[in-house]
Image (cartoon, rainbow, N blue to C red):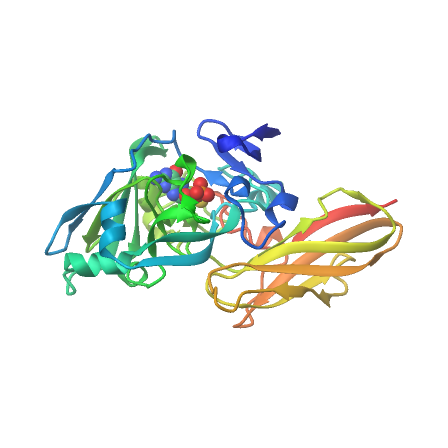
Amino acid sequence: MDAQGQSGRTLVVQSTEPFNAEPAPGDLIASFVTPSRSFYIRSHGPVPDLRADHAVQVGGLVSEAGAWTRDALEARFPVHSVLSVMQCAGNRRADLQQVRATSGDPWGVGAIGNAEWTGIRLADLLEASGIDQQRARHVRFLGADEVTVEGETDRYGVSIPIAKALHPDTLIAWAMNGADLLPEHGFPIRLVVPGYAGVRSPKWLTHIEVSEKPAPQSIQAKDYKLFPASVTKEEADWDAGLVINAMPINAAICTPADREVLDAGPVTLRGYAVASERAIARVDVSVNGGREWEQAVLEQRADAPWSWTRWCWQGELGKGEHELVVRAIDETGQGQPSRPDDSWNFAGYLATHWHRLHVRVA
Ligand SMILES: Nc1nc2c(c(=O)[nH]1)N[C@H]1C(S)=C(S)[C@@H](COP(=O)(O)O)O[C@H]1N2
Ligand SMILES: [Mo]
């Protein structure tokens, strides 16, 4: 279903309450930096109505608790921008649902975007607040919204390990692509944790708390965890699941579209590949279902380790049906599983298998 999204944009809507939507793949790959109007939206509830002078509370294992507005942060600390992918752990889930049903929205390849985020380093704020170096293990965050997980309604509360919180590219951000955050992307202030699943980047930030333990809220304790294929939701031991933080390598074909009918002659395939902060070393493309492979041309920014790579392959396709496939390899030589069956899990997270689609040349 196509619909006008929020802030006057056209997105493919997954659900209206809460509002979850992704760009059409062709729009997604139209530029290296994703314009805000083509950026996916993933919210667990209604968008809270916060004012520009809303203050974020800092507390827990710090010597100086405080409350900071965006203006106060900007006045006190160096401003820092990072070009980074934001990606939902449920990106490409629709393919896993072809294997067997899962919970969650059937995202295509568009629950991802590559934006320039601007704010201050979380590390600068934490250091100025005087962290208890001996006891600090995690930094917890609250959003202004509520989430219902497994029948329990709680504040949106997540955490990240202290080392990631102190990474110089982990931001408290107020701008996306040079403009104030739109309400649906977290106005006035959100966290941006480059390379981590989107869930760890809370929008509408209200609290930051340095702690010995991870956030207790169910979205951290139960949701966004990876379980083996043999485990069902009913029998899941929540504490045994892998907390999804850094995202694995992934790649997708964005144009042409699945089932598109093409004219005979030259054809261009375009898409993205990303592996958290690891560089993409190679993108392989097959136009015959994976029997033979050729290398795509990569578009990368050497100064932007958290960005995606855009790739492009040009060739000729003869008349008939063609199965197009893409797979990527990162700088460690790590690749992707070939089949969705290899990564199926009941919640449909981390769908990273080779992306396939079918076109017909008329
Ligand atoms: N407060 C709050 N923060 C949130 C969410 C939310 O529902 N509430 N959704 C998270 C998830 S699952 C993702 S993938 C990203 C999506 O960010 P975006 O909507 O700006 O693209 O926001 C994260 N931060
Ligand atoms: Mo997400």
